[in-house]
Structure formats: structure tokens, C-alpha cells
Image (cartoon, rainbow, N blue to C red; front, top):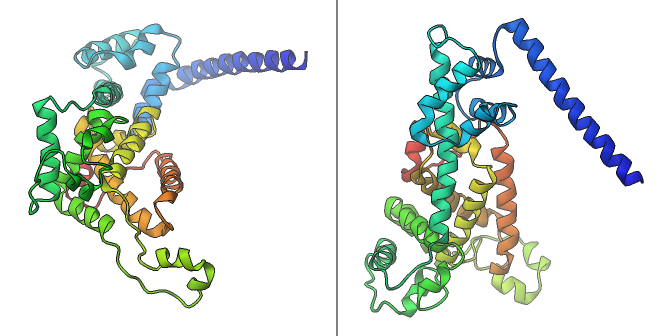
Length: 334
């Protein structure tokens, strides 16, 4: 009975707040002479803050036409803007900037949905060793990362040198499909110097200075492992596929809207996603070094902590992930 009453009260509160909010919107429109969409566009600067408010307003509208406007085809956006202006009884000649602002927001909103679909399609497509294009991309990854070390055979233990688990990398792409390969190749091809440096660091631990107190904090066996390096090695390719999974989840959950709506003036594309992956790989590598894990068994802990830090950063509506290397310079300048 208590559970039923609690549910009943919650439902009543929901409808009360919903009705109250709509009444408030009606009053504000009468006082200002502007609908909610106008107030958002005129009072909020371009970027994630504006686009996310427009998206919430359209989705929360009682009009089905407005609700469905966030999922139209990109070619139908101009017609959708005209419909919105007509529905809201806004004269486009008197409010020319409103149409421009709404179009920019809808391009981002619709583009983000389409990007999710494109990324999901790549994730679902499995690596096929019988497909020449797949094989060509895999070999390109090797050439970009190890230009001075020819691959002796397609099936080879050499693949372990760039962080794959066995002698045939195709088995490592099962979780993320072609998306993992696309991201790794993009990183290796467009940020070659950084990618090669991250790979080198992951393979070649460096000695570091230690304090007198540090050895006493660990057992002898732990210290023998620990004293080698501040950046204990990890499998470059496997971590790249794992970071692809992290980027994919940030995208699908909507967390990356803040970033993309701030850096893509129109529709975010697969290139934006791949540039973001490059940034995440670079940042995760630095974060791994800072965390100073005992061994690779701490990977999940470090990854989860890194994930939480990103989520916190992306809660800021003005946040744009700020990369410091070549492939992502265009993000800052867009």
C-alpha cells in the first residue's frame, strides 16, 4: 500500500510540475513576446549550451511536429525550420537570425544522431581476412607504426610488437569490429609521430628516480616490478581498441554532445570522432603514467578513473576537449 501511495504521489507531482512548467512558459511568452526557442537563441551564445537547450525544448514540446524535428533527414532541415517558424507564428522577415540559429542547432542535433548510426555500423561490421580492403588497412597500420621493420608474414608473432595478443590481429577486433581498426589506422596515419611515441613508451619502460621511503611500501617482488618505470608497459593495439570502446560509449550515452556541439559548427562527422579518439589515446597514455599502476592488471581501475574524469569535464556546457597535437588542431579552429 505504501509503495502504491508513493507511486501515486510521484505521478501527481510529475503532472503538476509539467502543467506548472507549461503555464510558466505561456506567461513568459505573453510577457516577452517570444517563444522558448526565440529566448534560447537570443539569450544563449552558440555552442553546446544553446544546442542542448534547443534539443531539450523540441523533444519536450507537446507538438509532435516539433518532437520529430530532431530526427529528420539532413536534406529536410530547411523545410523543418520553415514548419517550426509557421507553427510558432514567427515572421522570418522580422526574425531572420532565428532561422539561421535554429538551422545550425538542428544540423548538429541531426548530425550527432547520424554519427551514432555510422559509428554503430562500423562497430557491427566484423573484420574479414578475405576482404582486400580490410587487409589493406591492417597492413597500413603496421607500416605507419613500424616503417623500418617490414612485416615478414601476414600471420606472424610480429603483431605482438604493436600490441596485438597473437599472431593474427583479426581475433582482437571482435569487440569493436572495424571501428577499432579505423581508429587505430587514423591515429597512426595522421598523428604518426605521437602514435609511434606512445607505442614506444608502451614497449620500453624507463627507469625513474625513487624516494627512500618507496621501497618499504612494497614487498620485494612488487618492488622489482615497480622500480622499473613510472609508465609500466601495456599492449598498444589492445588499449586502442579499449579506448575505442570508451569513446563509443561516450558518444552513444550523449556525453560527447558537449564536445561536438562546441567544436563542429555544423554536423559532427566520423572524422571528428576519430580526432577525439586520437585525443583520448594521447590523454589516456599521460593519465596511465600519472597513475603509476603496479601492472597491467590495474588497467580496468585506471580506465574507469579516466572515464569518470572525462564525464566530469563534459558536464561543463562550455567544454571542448582541447588536444595538443596535429590531428586535432582543426578542432580548435573550427
